[in-house]
Image (cartoon, rainbow, N blue to C red):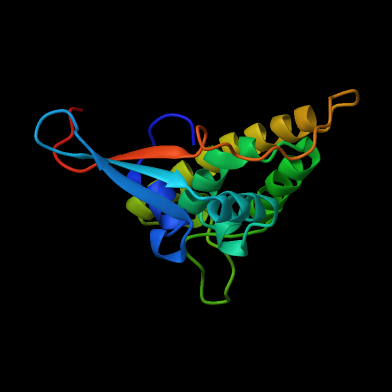
Length: 171
């Protein structure tokens, strides 16, 4: 992938032991060596397969969805990109909550007496509203009439590199 990436993003998505990644160690800044990961041809094919048809957990789990989204631009067909985003939007549109009442109904922030749980619900509601707005606008842009449709382009070796940095962060 272009530019540095967090280790977990690529390593968790495409395991080295499956022959999907090639790892090499390079000198790093300071004492920590730099781990460079590169997708193999098999890894490139697997990435495109996962982008085209992500598992349900990659749609419903926010962190896994964000990881998927970070690489979605490698799926060059806007119709397929929009299909992935539509699945996430459908998931967000289904009723859900962190908490349920005795009848199995989702508890809303307005019905939650615990201020800490109410805070969780309010923050989740705001985050979900922002994500829905982004998804809706992005899907509309991807499906805009006259938008150029392109076929999938393979991920090149230059695009398929990511770096891991083990050691103290400079943040």
